Image (tube, rainbow, N blue to C red):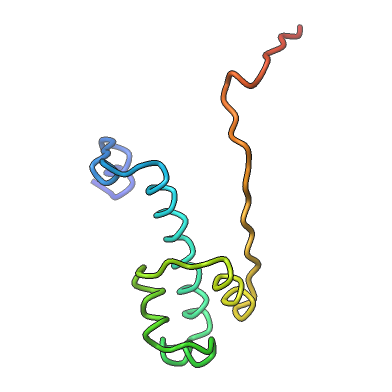
Length: 108
């Protein structure tokens, strides 16, 4: 059985997220995206953590924290990082809408 078939036949599971609030889950996903993007930028530049740290003006230990997912970024620190690696930080705050917020109009 190939990987695609295994994935297609996989049963849904929730054990990974059991006990996590929506806030915890959303924060975990967003932080993972941030960590992966920074690490990808370093790898694209062909730099070691030490070289990247020098480039970023931080310690190698800090880069290690970023890449080990053991860091809670501030907007300030993210903007500093993005400026140096030529990324734009976009934080979007949107109102939540539910099905009750809309009116369905049937047209022929």
